Image (cartoon, rainbow, N blue to C red; front, side, top):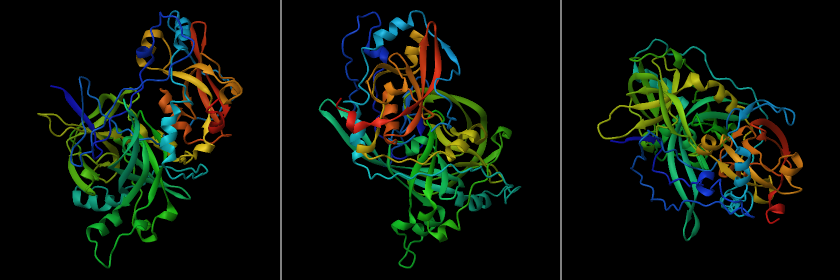
Length: 502
């Protein structure tokens, strides 16, 4: 019997596009060809979304199938350091440099034909960019107003104003034998209000809830009550349901922070919502009672209760962007967590946030196995995401450009060849951003502006949010004899449209 894990987002999402790994494309013993072929893709024809189905993924190793949506993406921001500062080294496998030469014949042309997929997506969107200067924001750890209660109804009433419903209108590029087309879908999830700065209200959720977004909208608890009681005197308008922008995310931890402009929130709603109080998930014990609140099945906020079944439960699954496999530690609970609950709150009996609801097991013979991200484990990540610059898609004619040809180096290549996971650079275009900054053939890109990069597709996605002329730190691994040295290089981006046909 196969275990089935599901991300609790509703309804079922499109199948993820996959780029073949280096191991699928090249025989390391073969003679290098003259020109690298464009990246191949697995043909995928998505199923129509089912508004009632709960998405599941079957695997011999329990794996969650994250929702794939195109957005900006964030790990914790890293401080800028001088160019070519050595921070650490990684050992290469035997004869790895020879294999690097073999690799140089493969890979998609990063900013040529393959980039057309991402740019087509950008052309369909309304372009907005909001520049927010970093503001120090800290998580709320003040004593709870309901400390000591065991009344679930009291906890729900006090904490519901901290929980929001999120609707994600997303666009996916689908590649088939007959060509590429775009498919739009709508899904729902939950979020938790965790802070604000001078201009934005900040909400934490799962990355898979907001991935590949075209448009995000947020329904606050007071507005939801009005929707339930709506009449001619108490109508809900579009102005009552503001839009949000992804501020930052961490795909490996399946976390994202989204921002809503304070000016877009009606004054009466702003006066009724609350910032969640952060608890201590490290103090949890099996048997502790908990309360889960979220936008179950997209029907609106609902409340379930149960106990902590286990702590520090390690689960291996695909990362939320689908590009890698990660093992994370979770809180296991028997409180019902259903589709749409992703990103919602797991609360202790003082109404404090102890976990972010994320996944569940759905398989025959299994009941009451839901999982939440322990809040104490990810506090630092959330703090960092909260202060990242808010970015939106850049108009195509202003988009930044690196000017490289690359191929994916995945985990299997790392194991076989002793190479770092990332994008192997098989060529650089003379006179463009990468070459001017000193990036050379044979380097492997592992991070872009602090975001972990494991595939060309991820790098393409990130560049949709950066303008020409911006200075960005690119982290590369450089082969030196029998090891790789990590260095950070400041790159001034070229203009994509001016150089795409070079």
